[in-house]
Length: 491
Image (tube, rainbow, N blue to C red; front, side, top):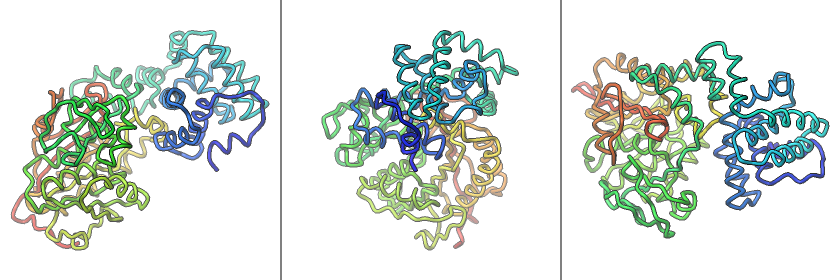
């Protein structure tokens, strides 16, 4: 049963709740109860409710703002209610979270925020309306800055204080600190945490070489251009195929798949592989963990322009369907396979001699995309890191074994956690028995970029950051298969 159906079945109440608030509540409930993904569910609920543009924007702000700051809001609620959140009905807690967000982080008038959330509480749990009213009125009598001071007073140490105020689990704060310290930029930690809680700009990827695309060739001219529906596209800061516009969703929908919503960091990760070296006609490429297919679409467009072919592998059938949908606008046949990337049959994949380029966008904690998937911060734990790094290492080994002599592998994660980036990479290189060599990834990515990138660390890897680049925190490392003994045996 959907979150919305659950909430509607709980109780009555005659007060009208604004459609935007109801949509936001339904999404929050589904995220909590069904482990739904807000970025996938919210557009569907907005469309189903028939929200106009203003109400859709309000529902989006309520949903994402509440999910991002949920940890902080729960501490405020505990202080205002004088009880732990575990003792509050989960649905009522979602109502309170939405109310606290309106009171402390928006310009919604206090009376409107309290009245509507109490009305919503009465529909969710009729007997809890008085409790919700008391809590929200208590919250409203204290300023946002004063609540920050009260929440900070309970911190055990400096990292716990940052975790409370930035609404991140403490283990993520420590992981970010370690990753920044590796670059000598630990002082940027607070800026990174703040960037995680900002609404990200929506970026578009204009697939190169396709009819209606802005980039007519693989170099691009960086000039403002017009999309198919007449919207003006402004070139993005870094990606040569990136663009921004006033109505990115509308532009993407009208493009027939040629223009798509995609973070600049993801664009650069895919292009780092395709443009690390000139493409020789007839090259065979593999997207090893392809779902949901955004990077696959970039690879397909680049392969079309360069005369290469692409195979996309995905372990989960439903995600393989997403890949097929993602590449529908690219007029090239991409062989989408469902299978375990750790067990590749190269002959069956049509590359008995190995692949010339492989993208390993490895399964990871996703800590680099918390701006776009805020619920992920509350779902992951340190235990997940150990499990994922084992999987990442196994996939890396399989990818090395599937490379043709001279072939290039791009190891990519949407996480800056050092165990998932340099840890996985270093261990895999040590196991490779000198079968691969690292490439100057920084030089490749800097050559792609429209404007200079402020990068730190070794030149063999690139770490992008939300606070520094305005992208997801993508990690990119390029390696090449070496040696005469690099012949690939059938698996």
